[in-house]
Image (tube, rainbow, N blue to C red; front, top):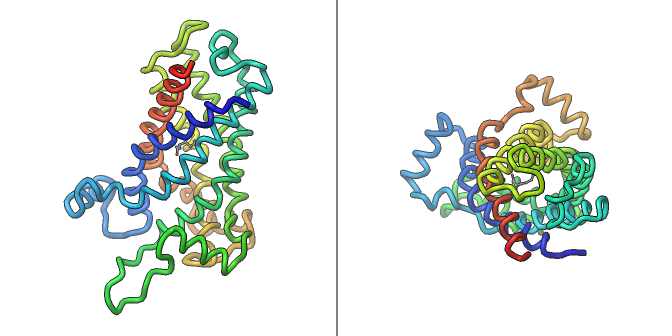
Length: 288
Ligand SMILES: CN(C)C(=N)NCCC[C@H](N)C(=O)O
C-alpha cells in the first residue's frame, strides 16, 4: 500500500488548517457569542483586542489531530482508486479514472475519516462552545480545562462510546460529500487541462477551492445536526436520535437552520482546500 499519499495528506492538511484557523475562530465566535454584529465586526474587534494572534487561538489541538485525519482521507482515497483502477497517482493523468470510481473512492475515504475524526471533532466542538470567560479568582472553573481533560471527562461520564457522540451524523455528512469533493476537484482539473497533462498550479488552486466550497455547501445541513447531537445533553436539549434532531430543529427554527454558518464555512473552504490540494499535488509530484 503506497504510503506517500498518507504523508502528503497529513502535511497538506496541516497547511490548510493553519490557513483556515482564523476563519474557524470567527465562525465559532459568531456562533457562540452575541457581542458581534457580523463577520467584519468580529474580525475588527478580534484584531483590536488580541492582535493577529487572536485569530490563531487554540490551533495546536486541531493541528495535531485533524491533519492526521486528512492523511487518512487522502491516503484511503488514493489507495481505493488504486484498488479500483490499478493506476498509481502518477499514472492517473494519462489514464484518468471514471467519475464513478472517483466518487466511490472519495466516499470510502470520507467514511473511514469520519470514524477517526469523530472523537477529535467532538472535543473541538465541546471546547469551542465553552463560552465562559477565562477563569477569574472566585468564578467557577470552566467545565473542560483543555482537550485532554475534555476527553477524560467524557470518557469517565459516558465510557468509550461517549467519545463517539454524533459519529453517525458525521459519517452521513462525510461519506457522500467527500465523494462530491473529489469528483468536483477532478472534473474542474480536467476542464482546464489538456489531456494527459498535469494541471497547472492555478488550476489546482481553483479546483481545490471550489471542491471545498461545493462539498461544504452539501455538508452544512448535516454539519448543523452533527454539532447539535455532539452538544446534546450539555447546553442544548437531548434528542431521541438523528431524525428527532432533524425534525425538532426544523420545527422550532425553520428550514434556514440547516444553513447556519454557510457563508463563513464557504469563505473558509476556498483557501483551505486550495492550499490543501496544491501542497498535496506538489508533494506527490516532487517525490516522483
Ligand atoms: C465537506 N467536507 C466534510 C470536506 N470537504 N471535508 C474535507 C476536509 C478538507 C479540509 N480539511 C476542510 O476542513 O475543509
